Image (cartoon, rainbow, N blue to C red; front, side, top):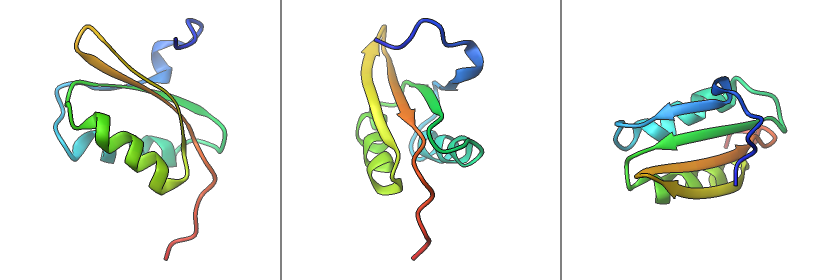
Length: 86
């Protein structure tokens, strides 16, 4: 379960956006954060269940939690260290 102490500012609302927008917007927000900070995402695109974990794995972020409630997919991500570009 996600910490109830989080505020709305900790949640990135990606509902009603289709692939690839949820990942692109999550990437942009995470780039603006410091290593170790936590971001919660909410999405309705079923592809997010595949895309967000893959994105986290590829970019070095930690997917802390993943779930679904009332048709909304929820993800909690800890920002990882920047990886050097190839």
